[in-house]
Length: 167
Image (tube, rainbow, N blue to C red; front, side, top):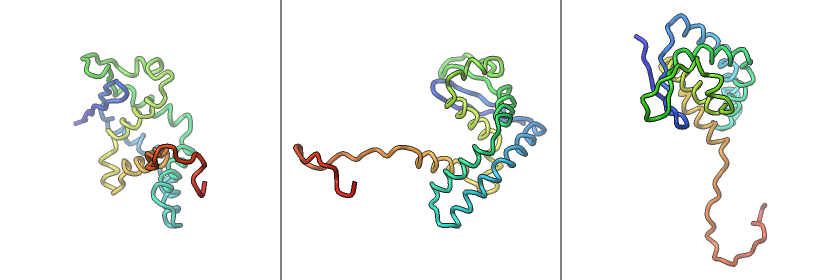
């Protein structure tokens, strides 16, 4: 039986139903071709002494490099028919396939988050079964890409405005 999962993204609720096995295996094969190169890149970097965040970033960069426009179109076109969406907290449910173009216009970050949610809905147990913590991998990459927040100064007011040593 196909499960459905609900994901909240930027004020919208997306209910994503798992693909059937025939469609799911086609998507999985396509993903594995892209992920294999990315995982190999990350693994090589770890073996060479890079930290996990650097390896995750390199792996994601390789994954993005391997994904073609046709791959992204295929993934979006495959998952949109399995998705209902509406404003968070409302009982409105629309078919994403019917309004995909307008719904995500100018909201490509939301589109990528939805696509990731669709992949999680369908393949989380597969990757977990292989011992791959894809969520942690992505989280490391996000953290590595996030700007660091400066710590509040502990110096008293009126301190020198000259740059700190070593800068």
